[in-house]
Structures are given as C-alpha cells and as structure tokens.
Length: 150
Length: 204
Image (cartoon, rainbow over all chains, first blue to last red; front, top):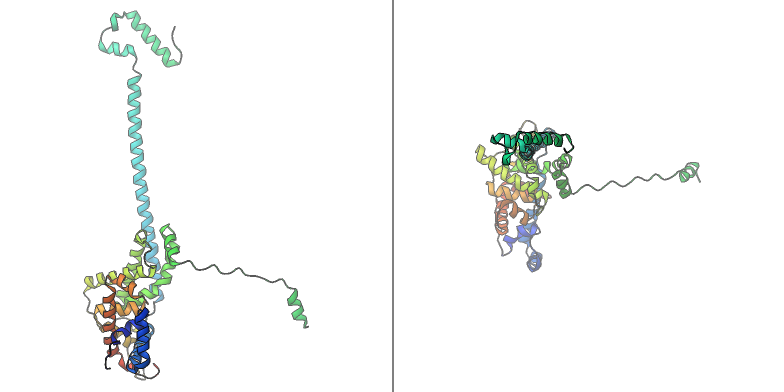
C-alpha cells in the first residue's frame, strides 16, 4: 500500500497506545484515508489470528507436572528451613553451655575457703597456729552446712 | 390460583450466600510468601496456560515450552520474597519466562524456525494435512511466528498472546518503549506477509 505519514503509527493506534492530540489527529485522518482504514483492518485481523490460532492449549499432563514441581519446591524449602533452625538451636546450646561452664568456674574460685589457700601456700596466714587452721576448717564446714560457727 | 403456586408462596425462601470473590494475584502472592503453598498453586492454575502458549510460540517446541514454564514457576516460587508489586504478577511471571527462554536458547542452541511437537495442540494428531487437504490455520500461524527472528517473535507474542501493554513489554524486555513499538511494527509487517492468504480472505 502507498504509505502516508500516519502508516507507521497505525500499529500503535491499533494497540490503544496512541493518546491525546495525536489520537484525535489520526482518527480524523482515518475518516478520509481508505488505505489506512484497510491497513488498520488487516492489523486487527492479524492480531485476532495470532491471539486465537496462535494459542497452544496446555496439556493436562503438563499442568499436573507444574503442580508437582511446586510441591517439590515447597518441600525443599521446608527442608532448608528445618536445617537452618537446627543449626541455630545448636549454636544457642553451645553458647549456653560455654556460659554455664564459665559461670561455674567463677563460683568455684569465689568459694575457695581461706584455709585451703593457706594450706596451699604451705604456711599459716599471719602467724596462725594449727588450732587456728582447725578453727577455719570448722567454720568453713559449718558455713557450707548452712549455719555459722560460734 | 393454582395449588402449586400457593404452596410455593408459603415455602421459606432459601438464600444462598454469595460466592466469595476470587483472591487477586497480589493477595495470592502475599499468602504464598507466608508459606501458603495452595495460594501458589492457584497462581499456577491462573497463569500456566498463558505462559505455556507464550513459551510454545517463542520456542516452537512443546517439550522445551514445558521445561521453561516449569523453570519459570520454580523461579517465581523461590523469588517470591523479591517481588515488590511494582508490576502486575502476570508481567512479573512473563519477565521470568522471557529470561528462561533466553537461557534455554543459549543452553540448547536448538535450531528454530519450524514448530516441533505442537501439531497435536494445533489439532493435527499426526502432523499431516487433513483428508480434504485444507491447511491447518493454527499450524500455519505457529510456523509463521516461529519463522520470525527471536526479537520479532518476542514482541508479537507479548502483545497479541499475552496482551501486555507497551510499557509492560518494555519492562519485560528491558527495552525503551519506542524500540518495542518499532519492533512490533516491523514484526507485524513480516507476519502479515507470511499469513496474507488468511488476512486477505473476506470476512476473516
């Protein structure tokens, strides 16, 4: 067909993509240009042909396969999430275990009785006698049992 | 008044609650993100046919189309968290499909230009002409689309099969809108030449 200045815009006009003043001008032109009207009609037929005859139906087996693939993807997701939670729980347990071990070690240090320190040093503290050492041991044992010595 | 009508007048009216509206695509995506796999299954039911038709026309091969559509939905499922809702779900899925088609082409380097395995879908069980010799229009249209270059095929499929607007096509293809328009113009010119026998028939 002989082209006119609007020919190249007919495809976009057919798709509803020409707006405003340009659309008004093109529609005015179509009223007076049989060649453009024919071209527009051919475009409509072509789009209709592609949209109907070009559409391939989805086989039922393919649809079922797609749904199975979604289920598999969802299961794989759950598996990954479970592994991540397990790793997190293990990390928390490890940290708690370390903290508790350290805390017990500190208590042990705080509760070392004086007589042990003195005995470990191999001498009596501040000139303390054996009787004094015995008194300390006695006090410590009574403290451990829940009441103070006299 | 007839007796039947009198009885009917005294019967209590049974009102059926209205059907709940179908959830929107965005609502289904939100539910799927929250772990509701059934919501994603609904998305598959809604979009599988359109995506398969697009893939079949883009690749011209039924087996490849199946693979690519499966990869598309698998990719969409894994990428649910990244969907921001700036485009429609259909556009988002189509964009994934187009990328998968491109990856598939690079992977297989299959020769394109004629349809393979789509004869059944076109209505010819054995791929031959019908007994009257009439050409199957569906097969001719599919072959005409397959004969286009990949870039022209994309714009025709996205516009006339998927019904995307030019802005959506530009987003899917990563092209300026003007390029989309000019490619579609040229693609339709070539397609028209291939299918002129059908287009020039009166009343087509």
